[in-house]
Amino acid sequence: MDQVIDLPLIVNGVARYADGPQDDDVHLLRFESGAAVRIPQFHRSHLDEIHAAGPALDAELAELSSAEIITFLGKVGELWDARRLAARMFVRRHAHTLTQFPDVMMERDYETIGHFLAQRWHLYDQIESEFGDQRILDEWLPVQMSYRRAYPRGLVLHYLVGNLPLASMYSLCRGMVTKNRSIAKLPSRDPISPVGLALAVLEVDPQHPVSRALSLPYWPHGDAVGDAAIASVDAACVWGGEAAVRSVRSKLGVNVPLAEYGPRHSASVVDLTDADVREAAMRVVEDAAFYDQEACFNTQRVFVKGDTTAFVAAARDAFATFTGNLPFVTENRDVLANRSALLAEASFRGFPSTVTPDWAVVELPLGTTDLPHPLGRTLFVHPVEDLGDVARHLDRHSQTLSVHPWRITTEHRDRWAAAGADRLVEAGFSRMPRAGFTHDGSLGMHTLVRLVSIERSWDDPGRYYTRRTDAAQHYLVDRYDRVRATMQADDLAAVGTDPRPAPAEGEQR
Image (cartoon, rainbow, N blue to C red; front, side, top):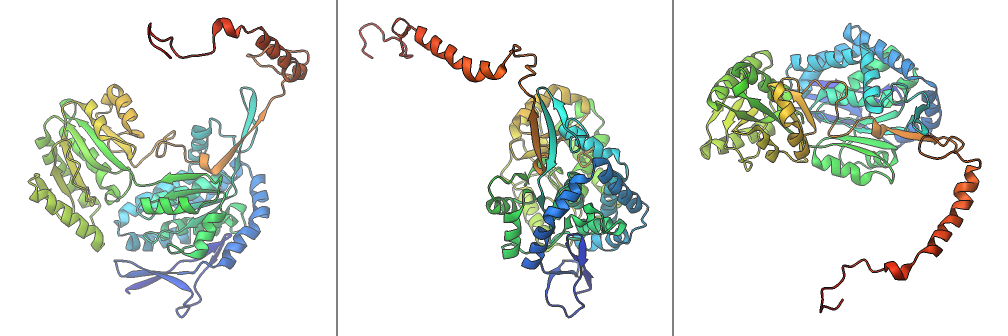
């Protein structure tokens, strides 16, 4: 091992590190870069601590307003952005070694989460865009004949994924802003990003209820304590592959809501008859290559109307420029072997291909779907004559469709959306969701809260009902008399009671 990085087990906002190099009560996670992470094991006693602290901590969180929570997180974001937190410098130093993403790519994500917290309107906008009002977590809001308010679920599981650093941090932010306690299962691919954000929160104020509501353990698949933790939560969100989604779903209790962010695929649509080819290629490559194509919103295929030869040439140049800014640095043998094998298959089958160690472009006839996508900054290019026909290649596993030029969206959006696209964005910006976006066809914070309603008294009839002197007498007593009177007046013999069509002449029923 070239380097051993100590990460804490965080329980109720307390960071617990291994007791020196000889401590064997730890998990040791090894990485392709030669680095290793040491993190204390998660025991039943730790889970018991989380549950024991729950009632009192829930009460403290309930007393906080959204403004108080967002202001506190804003302070964390300001210090994070100013690079004045040890936790911020910790992830700056070590994260790229573990993830094998370029350090500049990691820094872009860390800057994004800092801005998201420091610029407090982002969290207010997120609440309002999902619930219709930024005060839904604090006040009873009138909604027609009811009042409505959002309450936290309690203990929320974040089953995190390591292929997208920003996702794990964003998931924690959702838990904090909805006044929940969070138990975040660390991913083996990137445990450092969520721990780094949590340590930043603790560094600013370890006694704040939001800080003490954070627990971040690691456990391997099938771990008994981990399974017990999953079975004990009040809500859950799971990020990852199909196996992870199925596993978490099978272990949750009854009436526990689950937000599934499982495997999805995304694509781009380009109309070169109405766009500059170099700009189009630059935008599509940005959508494809960031995160080395491991995020659900990364473009894997691009459907091109127009001169595909010109587009492929421009894409080669765009990939070269992108690689100059963000080199493809992974040393993961499984990733590289899978990429090499599938690109060799594409070449063997006669598909025109440009393959480099850093990126690849493969031209495929429209409808060719039996060649699995190798990821690793590979762009499949499909010619298309009618952009509306892109809908035939979308399904319930689709996520983002990035489009260039943007003006063609209006004509085709209904077909694309009906076919399965959950999110339409301007090409080049798939990784930068805007306020009001949906996440895999849903609204992310809804799973984390209970929407409670108080219905108005029937003394207020509203606009649809006639005002009654005694509403209870009318609806609960008198209405039965009227129903019985109506039934007694029915002439069943005259109308008949058999709804089937009358038989044709000479036929019997």
